[in-house]
Amino acid sequence: MKILVIGSGGREHALVWKIAQSRLADKIFCAPGNGGIAQQAECVDIKADDIPGLLGFAQKEKIDLTVVGPEAPLSMGIADEFEKNGLKIFGPQEKAARLEASKVFSKEMMVKYGVPTAGYKIFDDPYQARKYLDQKGGPCVVKADGLAQGKGVIVAADAEEAKDAVIAIMQDKIFGDAGDRVIIEDCLHGQEASIIVLTDSKIVIPLASSQDHKRIFDNDTGPNTGGMGAYSPAPLVSRDLLNEILDKVIHPMIAGLNKEGITYKGVLYAGIMVTKDGPQALEFNVRMGDPETQAVLPRIKTDFLELMLAASSGDLSSFARPGGMVWDNRACACVVMASGGYPGNYEKGKEIRGLEKVERLQDVMVFHSATKKSGGKYFTNGGRILGVTGLGNTINEALYRAYQAIDEISFEGAHYRKDIGYRAVEKLSGSGKDGKSEK
Ligand code: AMP
Ligand code: GLY
Image 1: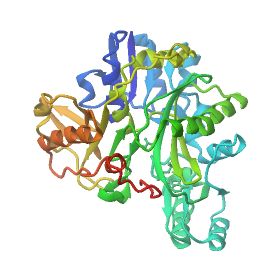
Image 2: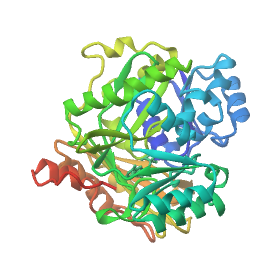
Image 3: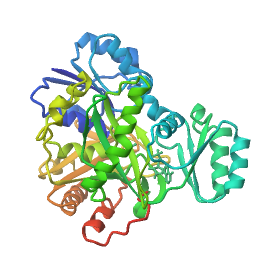
């Protein structure tokens, strides 16, 4: 089979790496890919949002399955376009992708179909939004309605900070049209977990739980990033809690989408805050998480390509049977190495040294997020550079492996968090303090 993966980050590298293990995969392309992805796939110079370009390539190469990594092409209707042209694609259609592309739509769906979520109000007028904040006061969360590369949410400590956020989003338009409307939401408290499932719109196959670390610095300080590390499983998510999240969040949303005439096929990702009143949905994404994917896929023993083929064909039943999904029970941890200055300004083109040393390490995978290969050497080419990932019998062992590998890798200005997985370690050692936000 010929497979095309769309995207260029660590998530896509992990997808390509996993697909390469499938007995069904003969040839893998990645558009546009990166230096590390080129180890397992042929990278094609077509941007992830160039839908006509991607369609033309898939037709020319007779691609059997296209796997979409990021949300942008999904929200632009890539799945509709491919399916219209008789091409199989893993990812939901444009209408379904609105669940991520519009936080207002997502919130309205949650409320309509009884998914527990924070109280909120929607504003399209900045003056009204600020007036409301004057009355409301206190900590709250201001969210731009549209896609803002994961940066459109501001958790404000007080009304003044929230009003500044409203001005920045709605008047200064720091996220462009994505800020035409905002949601002002009550602040929830608890620990977060990411629940990622595959669905064919009827059957739900939950993947292992995971948790990511959004802030740039240790102890969850500093600005939000795309994600500085992740680990799986998240010990916070017991079997009972997972079932509760499936019953209260995932199933009602998929049933709701069906009622709205939206057939959802692909990945559904729920960001959950586990509060003292139970799980609450923070957001829905319509694709795998980054870097959660890097910590979850190494734990899946089932052929992930077969799973994606089944979801896109609309029949996941064979994976829902007992034994349909086989897991590696070990823990997995991914630590992101980023460019100095990220998530602000950073330089590119720094040589990455030591990658060949970690190739020899057992149970270590290095997923490339933004690298370029030139003259047999790898260079930095973005903000998040590598997702250094370890598997181990315990989360501590997985973390040890990842950090041991990081010790071998260097590039000028490299920055990484030293405390990835600390909540899991605390929880497992019995010293975890619930009731405090992870991010
Ligand atoms: P979202 O993109 O909606 O998941 O928001 C990004 C991050 O903002 C989440 O991972 C949380 O850390 C935080 N967040 C979002 N909504 C809330 C809320 N209602 N209360 C507290 N934190 C929130
Ligand atoms: N790691 C968070 C996300 O992928 O949205």
